Length: 292
Image (cartoon, rainbow, N blue to C red; front, side, top):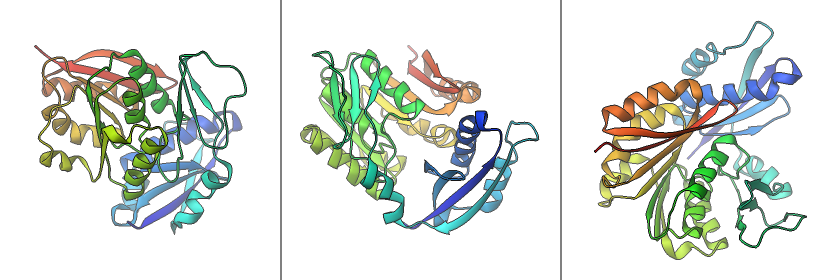
């Protein structure tokens, strides 16, 4: 797939740059953008060339909920995959500790202090995919999977990115994971990371969107989807049709607290009940179960 690299130049007070960048990423996600990295000007976003719509992007950026001191402009260039991947290839990322029981690291960096004997260690070679634990929504998802009993359960990982959620579930005793991502390199990267963490014998990874579920005749005990709000709203019927009606759990993240009512209403229409909401900064995670 061919992508555009869109360089967002964010002009704002330095103390709110991180917040503005998060909101720009969330809004651009609604306009079809799939991945983001920091840039010298604020933020770089990546969108499939066939899906790029400048008018749609301008419309969502007009919704920026900040005062007059904030402005966002952007330039569009064809994405060079080698350049996009260069920071990961050259620098990697520092270990990320989630709670006291999980550390996510790359092959270059290990924790410098002693860890508890039962700490899970996940090695991620991020390549072009999203999901190292740096983002609030990934941490929310990991924390939720750490809290759930997963032994001998099956998991569906929607928009898998690096495969981190599948890998964590399998390391915690899940019997099988099925994962998919629209990006070819994410599907390849997820399987690569599964091999690194010795769980590749229990995972299947597909390239595609939620429509691939039409060819998967299986129900899952746990379904995770860390994707932007609009995709979640559109794909939720697919998730529900593949969720175990007896105690299945659907975990959603990738959206702001302000989006929660929309997602809860949609889930209720599809026969799900909200069991848990967790928040970090302005981001949220929701856990649903079938209504009995």
